[in-house]
Length: 265
Length: 161
Image 1 (cartoon, helix red, strand yellow):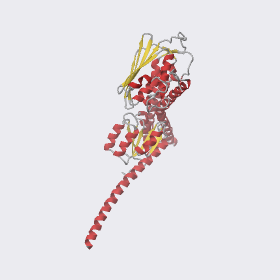
Image 2: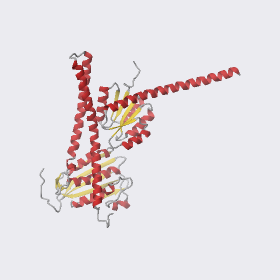
Image 3: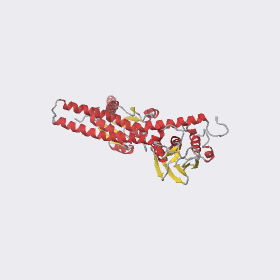
Image 4: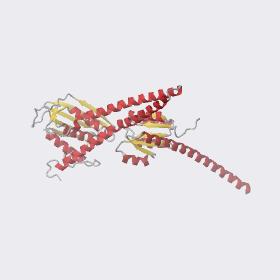
């Protein structure tokens, strides 16, 4: 157990990382499944279409009836190939969005486009956001020096919590602004909100609301810790029944560490 | 010939993802004699069911607005004879099992699906629907015959009293 309220323990941090990893894997599997299902089905259709055409051409005589069949098969194959193009594009975009998530933790922070991480998060949690309208209110943001995979864990926790709070649909607004020497990312939902008597506790390790999945109770404690490690701040405002807004402020450059080092791609 | 065989029959395909509907439609049209009705909106599909019967319905589980179980439950009350097949994502197995009872599922298939398994399920589903319809008709005939018999019996009894 965590004593003295000093933030999450090492074990709890590991648990939270595993929970995020679980979400990540579930998201990837889910998002790939649809285009993969289409490609898999269409692959067989094309295979059999070619087989059919081969059979017709085998005797080197094409009757008018066979010609009609050839036309039909070619038309169907063309349509199936168009769908494949869309499916492949969807998968390419998903992988592109995942670039930051896939990177292992590096010891040194690097300049990062936060919008890329936000888009990756939204792409991965797409299955949780099906009934939710997502508004991207993105401002001009300079690159922020940070650990991208850890900051993405922050976005993932906040977006996941927002989705969980809006089971019956709602609006998720992600607003980004550069304000002086820091970047502010606001994640606002129109969900059920956090009761006033517990809002002080939500960043405590182990805090959870009923019905949350095991492991998610650590989400906000870890979120707070990651933001603090980057020299940033996080604040919350919530109105029960109306929604919750989280503001994450990150310094464009962390106060300590090799802030001047530019990452080479 | 007007008689529908299990290899033909009307199949409704409902998924909010265009590419899934397109893929299944493409496959069924090329490989089978089914008439395919594609829908990306479950509500539009329900509207269609109101006016036209179908033999089998293939629906996705995760859809915004109306999920597959809700959709198939409503379809069941409107067209009980239409066989219901649920298509589910990789991790929805538990929900799919719940749906077997709730929506009176005939079968559920996991994505990515196998075309041969899907075609087999649809073919058997259409056959089941045709049998269901025939059974309903026979039941009605039986009931009518029963009524007639009861009337006859009554007249006989009266004739002898």
